[in-house]
Image (cartoon, rainbow, N blue to C red; front, side, top):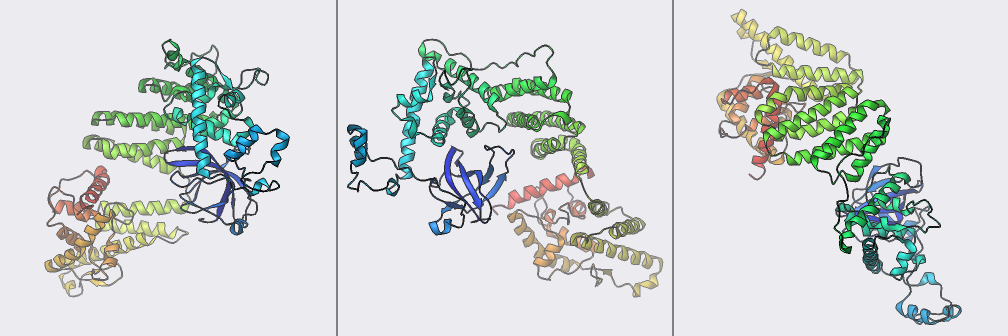
Length: 632
């Protein structure tokens, strides 16, 4: 909730894509303190660690800690924050801001360097009393600290590049000594901030990280392992959270070799390619699980640099190994990494699609991926693949291909629905909705006996519900019962002409007799409805017949279903033949085509659409109407 979560001790982790990511101590009002990582707009002034702030605009939780370790954090996001006064900050009693450590003034530095250590305490600074506590000095402004860090990053980069050209490594203390900074001036938080800023451009361009040249001393590092802060740098740069110490050591060694090769050309030798596109050879007797881990490590290291065919081959090998291991025996990190690289491959292929034939080829490839996920029982993967197939099906396929695969899309959609857990009430409601939709689809060929039987089935399903029936389905059933009564009267009138004196018209869904309209009434009602449909098209939305009745303020009476169709036919009497019909914006209660949609198209001489493609054709016409009326 806005204004309910405060934070302090903000330490910048990374800044990319117009946003800054900070590690903080956070606390909701009345709750406990926790470690969090917050994403904030980079356009705002950076929070300083010795102030307390509260999240304001669109504050949201993006994720919870995955483990109980000290490095696992909550992930938050907000579009704004406000600094709290000390009085307000006291409401978050567990938050302890970092005590500011002011930098010495230039005069103090010069004096201190020329004064023996025992006498420095007695040197006055800026006219202040020698007994004045350092905590009451004016802190250095945040922009000055940021500028000083920017200069440090530039100096660190210069020294590390020079080290790479010489084919050597350097310890952290040696690196700071080269730029004239004392190690005690750079704590762990500032060290992580500097190294992250130093390597962020290299990570974005997929170049090796310069921080891989930093080592520990030989005494502290006998086994050639990376410094402990290197893994934190990797995580801050966006590496997966499952990057453990062993994985960080592999990356550290590989990047160090790449850095040396990349800068070898500056010493007179030609630079060599940093990676090889081939998969690492399999060891004799290696089990599929270990081989799969090796392939995934290869993808993590070189996937962004691989050409699309090489990436595809690596993914095929990974999928083959995953099938050998078996879906139930794959760990969650392995599944997530496989899903990530499948998504990368899909995006590459989508970007390369330029013709309908390429789009169909990609669609068939994704359909095979869906079938594999379905056979493995992986519902999450199947849903991700199907969501990617939707835009390709609707926007990239040719009309002929779209019609050919419509049945397949419906089959996949139904499988996903069948796998999702549902209660008996959900099943009854779904069956009732399908029954009402079927009535609308078969409206032109439905006999009175069939309608009576279907309504009896609807009553049986309704009696089995333990929850109230939605209003939209109530109204739909009332309309169909009125239609049934009208049909029965008409048949009775045809069998007995003397019943004409008793039959005065159809009955509306409220039980009120609704006489049939003449042509002038149709035109008058159509003139009222047409502007409402045009407004709906400009707003990018559809309406139901009940919405139209409410928006006319009662001017639209209860109509016989056949009269509804006639009114909508008149609405489009001046619509150009090359534009979709405005009446397409009148939808059913379940956001499906209105039952009269086919009848209206036929009345205007529009091309017949097959039943299997009718719903998708209607959706495309609705989207086209939104585009046409956006600026009209």
